[in-house]
Image (tube, rainbow, N blue to C red; front, side, top):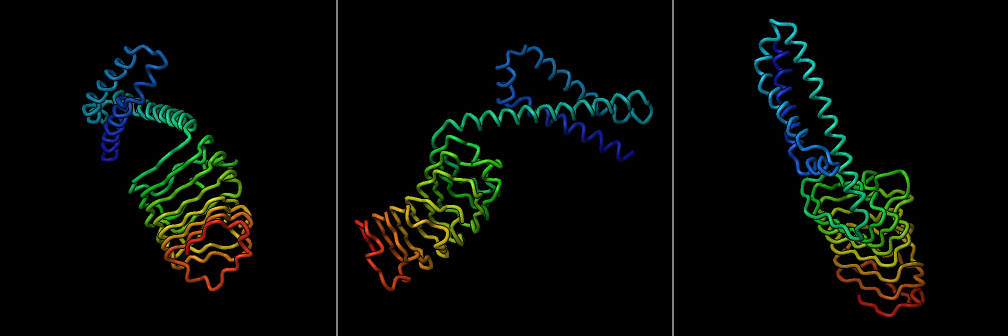
Amino acid sequence: MAAELVGGALLSAFLQTVFDKMASPQFVDFFLRRKFDEKLLANLNIMLHSINSLAADAEQKQFRDPHVKAWLFAVKEAVFDAEDLLDEIKYELTKCEVEAESQSLTYKLKDCKYCLCLPPLGLLSSLKTLKIIGLDGIVSIGNEFYGSESSSFKSLERLEFYNMKEWEEWDCKTDSFPRLQTLSMNECPKMKGLSEQLLHLKKLIIRSCEILVINEHYMDPSTLKILRIYSCPLTNVPITLYNFLEEMEINGGCDFLTTFPLDLFPKLCSLKL
């Protein structure tokens, strides 16, 4: 009997969830944009509220009347199906929003303090600039960021991170960021290293990433034009041939430099150490 009473309580809880979803502006807009009759939505609300009113009484009568028990079971199944349908509508709405967002050239994700993983922003195929700021819950970035098995961030040219206090690791897909030119990482104190796939940058800016290490195998010096590093005492810049580097600035973290062979920087125009 206790299990059946719990089932009745769950019915009321599920009904409340359905009410909330049906009352959302997104669902109402979805309903109206498809030119459904508004009376249909009103009648559905009335019917569900009537069921909710009868549910408490039916919970008690189901143990004496098998017809009431059968009705209550059928209602539960119908409510569960309705919630599944609303979830499908919500998914379609979210998909449409993502597709619409993909027409935008710039996207900023800011101060989502309790976000533990990034949304699949790699699906925004027209995105040119992405800024991610103040996501304290992010420890690692992996496949969830890219969103598909095919190429991700197909058009992205500029990627910026700011104030990512707990971020430590970045796992990058081999076919992502085919057009990325600028990477800026600011105030990521626990970040250990650049993603292995970010090879062909033209501009790299690193600020206050105290333990970040740049591996010479993860960065193509033949494409880099601008390199700026600020307040990164443990960050070592590989001393190798930079064919196209025009501007280099290292402030508060150039202890690794013991020699600076100018012949490795044939196009260098500006140098600040």
